[in-house]
Figure 1 (cartoon, helix red, strand yellow):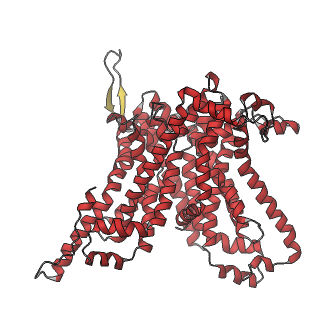
Figure 2 (cartoon, helix red, strand yellow):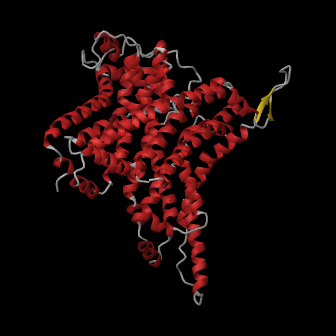
Figure 3 (cartoon, one colour):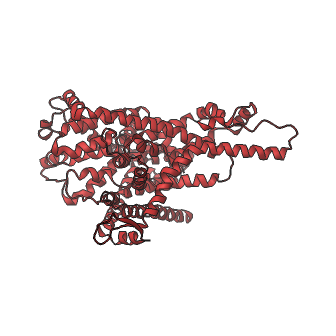
Length: 318
Length: 287
């Protein structure tokens, strides 16, 4: 490791003026700081920033084959052609609409549930709060793919114990029907992440000073009014954070539809934006795949920042 | 000190308590039943999968199922588990050290560009790595890094959230006086970091390690893209291939029992280390 060779700048040279010494010291410290930072920063640039730049660069090119296809195809600068194609590509657009639409329904449902559970756990009405907290958190211990594999069996006709139970009650449920695909996926995401989001909100609730509730209770406030007027405004930060992360998670939806494709033919190979980009890449069109990745990243940023701006403005008006 | 809720009208309390407990039990069932099904089904031979009640045991065949899992495809399951452990344990360890050094530098040194670096790291928390996994794959294939352990390990080491967490923790809990005392004693900056700072930051480091370990273990897209050789794949990718192959050869009970075995260590780790999770989530949730 290179860091071990760093020398501290504390040895005072004889006769040196204090100002000069401070400057030399600060230069030495700056160098140490960058050496501590270097391993992370180099890897960060290489695996985080470089792929973004590479994707943007690649997205401006396209493979060009001559008319007869006799020579090897060459890449050619095409400016924004790939982006024009992406925004006109109905399959890609419907994959975007699909994940955004699913997010608009699923994220509020999930976070509403997380908030409710956190508030109930925080109230005095629950016995064994520790046990429930652990049980709610259990789904997060399963990797997303493994959870998806598990749910794929729970949905599969013939195996599904849920369909069997519904059948015994006189209802025929087919989880592989086209109309069920989005609810299937929404349920998998909700199952995996509600408890996790609940813990984040719960931690924020625990940080609210207890005096606030006690004063309100002395004033005769009911439990629900305390929750609405004091607790929820105080966990705004946690709610905003979980919303942004849920939006981001939904846009990069991949494992769930990828696994469900095994049991239902309603999921196309470009069902979500990431699957679509992967499809383009598998077909050898790396440049178009890169453009799709950039569009998706921009969409993520726009959604997150719009939401943050929106909540900030509302917060400022209070 | 009495909690405020107990002072509210006593008559309504019993009813609302029952309603609250009903919600709790219902959601606990929703969380647990699928996992319970997995546990129960791991004990069934494939024939009974279709004919028996999914939520209860019959014909305990767990041991023969486990033998089948480890015998499938020349015993590749053990290799997958080992790969997962290597990616997660080694990746998380390097990641924690790298993040700790970066977080410490950002917290305790004044230098030009510090805020710019930190803001970039913060912005990166909001850009999911999955979005650029495909370009990363294209880059790595140019330098012939794909289909090696490195292709998964190197990107796994980078954790903007880890840097954020260690910076916040170092700012709050490593006093400047202590660093100054070390310097006056003639210790080098590196020595101060490795002997004093790391120890003081250990609670945050445990949290970062756990988050990274699980994050790497759970990652699916990155290894799917990077690794074509199934002997290099982690268990998540391996099981997904088995799941897809059910039409041509991998029996259901093998995939299901494999899934059960693969989550066993994680669930144990989660439940026994819960307090570290909570502290990490709290740090993430409070601004």
